[in-house]
Amino acid sequence: MNEQVMQAIAQADLAIRNEDFDRLMEFYTDDAVLVVRPGMLARGKEEIRKAFVAIARYFSNSLVPTQGRQVMLQAGDTVLVLSQTLLSADKEPVGGESMDRRATYVFHREKGKWLCAVDNSYGTTLLDEPAD
Amino acid sequence: MNEQVMQAIAQADLAIRNEDFDRLMEFYTDDAVLVVRPGMLARGKEEIRKAFVAIARYFSNSLVPTQGRQVMLQAGDTVLVLSQTLLSADKEPVGGESMDRRATYVFHREKGKWLCAVDNSYGTTLLDEPAD
Image (cartoon, rainbow over all chains, first blue to last red; front, side, top):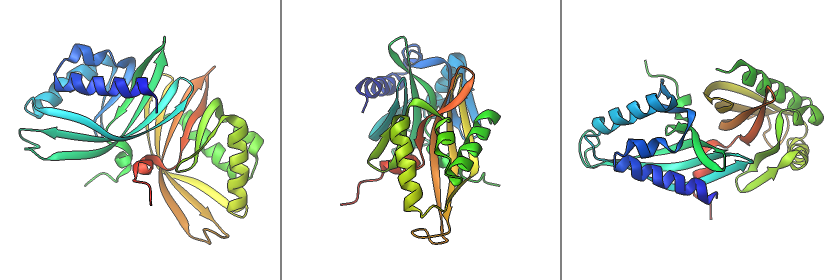
């Protein structure tokens, strides 16, 4: 496990919980891509920031992401993170329920700092056939 | 979809089928990591080459990998590939059956060429609890 990447993910989760989107953007590369939902991507910090503001509103400002089991595969300055991501929210639409996802993140080391280049909380479920 | 990455994966699959391991190694970064099986990694070209030789022997030199549905998430010089990978082999232990996996690969562009940095054909199943 790469401790620096683990810390970055934990701090980013805290920034989401606190809705501190300026802080959250510090964890992404300039050309990062976020899977907002299957078929919808946000590219670059401006789009990603807007997406997180919309996601917070969607979850009535009560979203709490936490990471469960993690596996990291590092090759030099690149790390693929597989992570059990738990999303809970006090209010609708989750309504006290939690969502368990298997996320895939790619982190890249730039000037000594590990930053998220690909943020895909949907993992390999993006390969599911699209519903008609 | 990144056409160059798609071509690299197809050509690497062909090299595996032909057991042309010198050719196969051209598709990896120097510090690449391969998940040989859950809990067992090969790091760098020398270890990865040895692993593929052992895998070919395990499948009685009849292994045929092909890719099905693919999703690619690109951020600058980094691409996360999600791929439905079909492994078939004429002989034991697969014995005419095929194995369907959801793989996760990370490709990185170095000097204009896309190379595989992380080769994990097990995808997020690495998060499964280890069997006792």
